[in-house]
Image: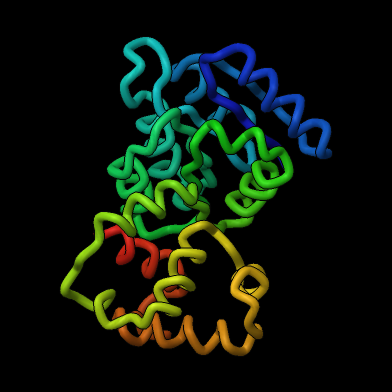
Length: 214
């Protein structure tokens, strides 16, 4: 897996590169600002980009803008965004195109090295990964009167774990149920959210979008 890193903090940038290299991945570029990040994504043909939301020169949303531009140029280009704090509008904005290959994690999660590397790999494979704190924030805010309100408590648990990027086997293990039971819950979620099999081939992403209140 070829990885580009865009992170202005030198220690974190070098740390990310060392972690990924130690796990057998190839870091083709590790840069500190938005302009260099854009060039690196265009010039090195990476499989995934790890991007800090706030990059020089203004430290607002430069990283996010580079990520959006990369995905506009190459639909579905995998991007894992790192953020210092939970900023739910960024997560929602990232998922707005309805495609997979996206992740949003708090920088603190890097301390869980194995979990971080797995998140990068999930995103590179086209999956969706959301930080558990982002999911928790949405859970606290939700009170919707749409399809989500019809979900059972168990179905909401399953959807929350889907939003964290867990595959069916991981959801089953976390909840202590069978894979068949998870399949049943997911099909019920799709039905209640009106996501039909012939509507889109990435219904998991659309379900997460509904969960986030797009």
